[in-house]
Picture 1: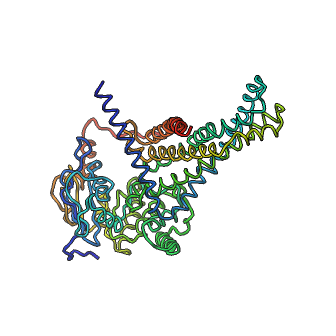
Picture 2: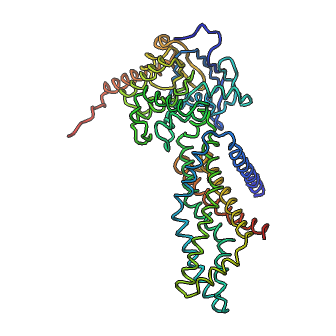
Length: 258
Length: 272
């Protein structure tokens, strides 16, 4: 048992080191990549435009629920006027970056892990290497750079739509004055909150897309499965690991920034 | 075309070894390839022909032995020699390994775009020219999944030759094809080998066609080269392993004839 535990620990440390190297080396390829701009734009389309509907829908419903729950709780203490503060701070500090990241993992991250897994499986990555093309620079670097841009933008959209959702349920449906709601939002949110939100979004984006790329890129190294099963196993692993990492990183970043 | 007079062979494989766990795939494989030759490596399935080619291309790392390209040894330590080899060599995968998210034109342009300093105009010109030479210029905007198997093979060849390589490695280029398509692929390889003057190393099981198109034949068996020489010598060899491989259709015919002469053998009844 001790041996198994030791083996697992060493294997975990080895994987972490490999993942860190994979991410840093891929980012390091930024300066050597050719025609990078076009591929970053394509990745931005995948992580941005294609994920827009899910971000807008989930953002709106999160705001609606926060407005509804918040209004009834604050009503007990006669503090409905603070609804804007409750909705905005919840969204900006926590729910916006975390939920947007989880949605992006589900939509863009899983697709990315599966795509890279299939490319590995069908020897497309090996073909790039035999052509002298740096496969990481070609396939991973643009995705990481796009994540650094797309996640903060998607989070900002998520928060904006969420605020309107809160206004819809709090003011339009439950009768709180719109001016009271928006002035409460304005007073509550400080530049430091927005900065925290953007830092979280950037870190979550980099972490989750790097994990998805790493899992898909190394789908062939899965000893338990081969072929299509290896692709599905690596996609599942990518999504689960990304979700855990988002929540763990959220705790770490919050504890540093609070 | 052959440059056998050159003292330095283009490619030289010396005592290559490769194991996967306890399984020894290549134990002592040697091969010499001269410029302009069409060299074919034959062997039964699972004898390590594709592994040999992957060791050459740098996809697999050999456990022992050495590979020399144009007089320089290729090692993991010498990244420059490996990069030079990749620049001058192309690899045609058995599965074609075309990038399915790119169009035919983008697939062909990819190696030029990523590994050369050519202008975009020049890249497009050369890519379209390669597509035209392989009669694919009308399909430039199609994705590989929208093309037939033969067209995909030609597209993979267009991508392989667009960088004007000196050496092209073909991994079972006719696997899974019917006899007509098999002949078409082999004649295509020879046609473009003569047109562009590259050296070709082909891994296959198709003995009959190989004897027609090759300058040099090698038979891989049990991890080593059992035979190396001219196709004529291969056709006349009395080595039992060569005979077994070369004459397997005749041996099958003899076995079936023998079975027919046995008293309990009956022809299958065909019912409509």
